[in-house]
Amino acid sequence: MKLNTLFSPEKIGNVQIKNRIVRSATYTRKAEKYGIVGNTLIEFYDELAQGGTGLIISEFIGVDPSGTASAYQLRLDNDSFIPGQRKLVEAVHNYPEVKIAAQIAHTGRQGAHPKYPPVAPSPIPDKNTGLTPRELTKPEIEDLIQKFVATGRRAYESGYDMVQLHAAHGYFLSNFISPYTNRRSDNYGGTNENMARILTEIYDGIKDEVGKKFPVIIKLQTQDFVIGGLEPQQGLEIAKILVDKGFEAIEPSGGIGETQIGTKNAYPSRQIKSPEEENYVLPIVKELKPSMKNCKMILMGGIKNPISAEKFLKEGVTDFISLSRPLIYEPNLPNRWMTGDLKPAECRSCNSCYVTVFTGPVYCVVRRRLEKREQRKMK
Ligand SMILES: Cc1cc2nc3c(=O)[nH]c(=O)nc-3n(C[C@H](O)[C@H](O)[C@H](O)COP(=O)(O)O)c2cc1C
Image (cartoon, rainbow, N blue to C red; front, side, top):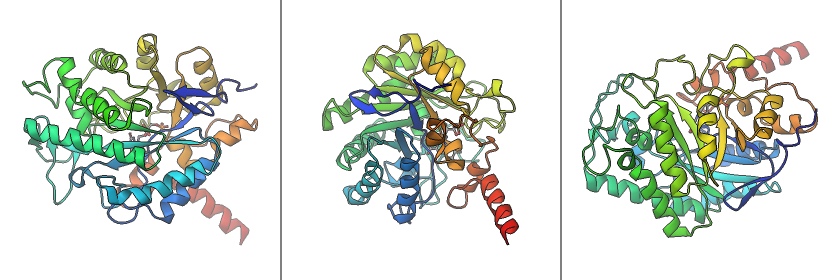
């Protein structure tokens, strides 16, 4: 079987992507201390770019020191980070036609930084961190919007092909679009338009700074999987507001830190025991796609099988597919599929990689174990 659609080019805005395979943003914890790009990180992205992915979405990059997950998370909150970021982008652009997006983020309600207490639209205690975030004032929200905009401008100046807002998984921007975490009565809460305002203002701000041609895409929370949280119907209505605004692509996701580990369909699901359970965001994607107009759909979550990916693309269910954990295990996966080895991704969605970033650089525990076994056999 030929994967004609999976390996055909497609555009996001007017940026041409050589195939339909996107690397979904993945925190590697491989930056040097205080968010600086170093050789370890560059080597990691070099390997990814070499592996055949069309568009690499970076790991989440901090817009402000108060919203970072660790000292080893990338930052772009002031201009001094630009030269390092340029080296990262150049390493990817060394491979013909490979594109890279900067994912920009603030940890918001889920921040657990020793120096900066967490902040959020509303002071709702977080059962996962045990902390209650401080409610932001309107001027503080406006200030953080400017920080997202300035980081978008710095991503552009670093040479990134586009920027992705991280508005999922219980982090700052997703806190605004959830009725569980946003109880505000000013113009950043209440109606769907108000809840989405922070996203549309950042979109406008980045476009005003760098011009309309630089695509602004979004990883979008569509379901929280907690009682009183964002449900798919409201998630879809918010997504439509963003389509109308002009966001060039949406990558729907769901689940927050408080979502019980193992909840089906919450990110990153480890309930994938059969091929039927792969592509776990598919129901929402199918509902949203007919309203997408010029906005491109990126289907994410549990994708392992190139034949089903080809089918979804061919049927117009999605424009792109994205992978996170499978590329940690096999950075060369797109090339493997392209050269005719259509075996599904080796990744077992066990989340062992997810656990590694709490204490050190990301790696696939299963792959490392197998490699060690091989080495022992060779001795
Ligand atoms: C180690 C690890 C780090 C992640 N870091 C991010 C991140 O920085 N930003 C983000 O939006 N999602 C992040 N995710 C979620 C993935 O992008 C993706 O949405 C999720 O793993 C489901 O896709 P998959 O089944 O292909 O892994 C991370 C996931 C893992 C396993």
